[in-house]
Length: 424
Ligand SMILES: Cc1cc2nc3c(=O)[nH]c(=O)nc-3n(C[C@H](O)[C@H](O)[C@H](O)COP(=O)(O)OP(=O)(O)OC[C@H]3O[C@@H](n4cnc5c(N)ncnc54)[C@H](O)[C@@H]3O)c2cc1C
Image 1 (tube, helix red, strand yellow):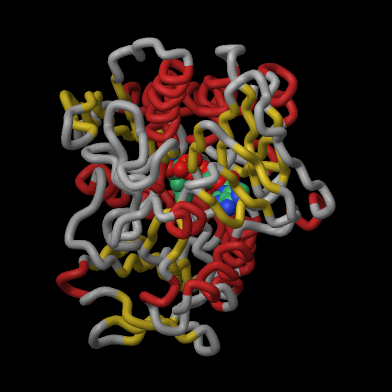
Image 2 (tube, rainbow, N blue to C red):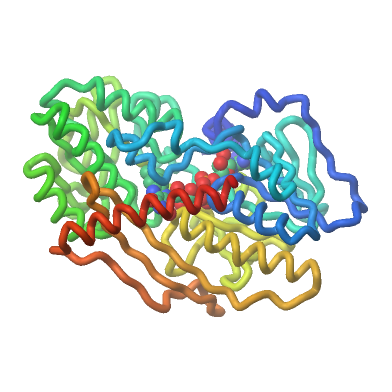
């Protein structure tokens, strides 16, 4: 795929609200008194950096975000299961602007000139920066699965960027006949939210159990093992016996192609026909990070662990799913944690002061049935090589229901806390 085609695909996939912003042509005046930080991407990573740098009161912060609202991928599986509405996981940037004075620009960053320290915008404007933070999340490697792409995702949704894609997948499951087959195609490592596809299977199964109990879910994995595997399998046997079948990569050989006309998924030596197909393609750093030159050959961005500074571009930091995160998974919790370290380092650096010693944390909760949560988490420190794990924990198989209920409650508390931290 040429870079031009890849760029058009990436920009299209960011959503449509930028059309509303056309005509807005912000340009920061060079020589402004306060140092200027521009953040591209208002998700878990970018919104956090913007808030925490702005809170210092010493920096002008501009957040460039393609969409006017942010629907969280986290808890979008609960929407599929019928536990949450889409509205309840959709947030506006209004309070972020009002509370800490972040200037929120609804636009798409189309280019970075790292020599001139300028970000160009789709509306035609540009923003000058002293420090740039790239937090664009992920893009898909559509070409990795024959027959899949932006048109095919309207038939076989990935629902791995939340919003319209989540609504489409939910509608397809609700419209499916009882006795239908849902195929889930999880991506190879590394990818956003390692437990995500398996929590999704649990949530879809929860819905089917009560509404279409003769239906089945088939997971065609390219991996031989997955996050919280024993815990998910224990839950599936208990809550959805006979409904979910998981086939590892050593049996499937991975999904090679899809045929949207016949609703077929093709593995190395089998073709599976299904009623609903959820294809989650292989992933890479968001397009703007790659086109700026912040990504390595792998498609992900190498960064210094102690401050999230790009190893490839001066005065540029990268946080969240786009980075090579060492031992951390790609999660909203991790992005939020990295973003605070990054914000602290930027403010300290601009003021010529010492930054705090960085510490990182992550927990990934998954809801598997009503009031039944499981979790995995860890603490991390910055070493010369990477963000390195120092200790960890995971739910145990055979835990009692009180513990599982407490874990589910923790997840609800975490969601309320992180969305308040991001959006006010
Ligand atoms: C189904 C599912 C369930 C999940 N569950 C959990 C969970 O329970 N816990 C957890 O911690 N994590 C979870 N995650 C993972 C979490 O959503 C991501 O890891 C997190 O959102 C990454 O944050 P980010 O800031 O890197 O990217 P994002 O949150 O995706 O934000 C990127 C933002 O950048 C914007 N953008 C991109 N390019 C441009 C551009 N050129 N110009 C302007 N704007 C741009 C996008 O519009 C987007 O708003 C889940 C993910 C999925 C898919």
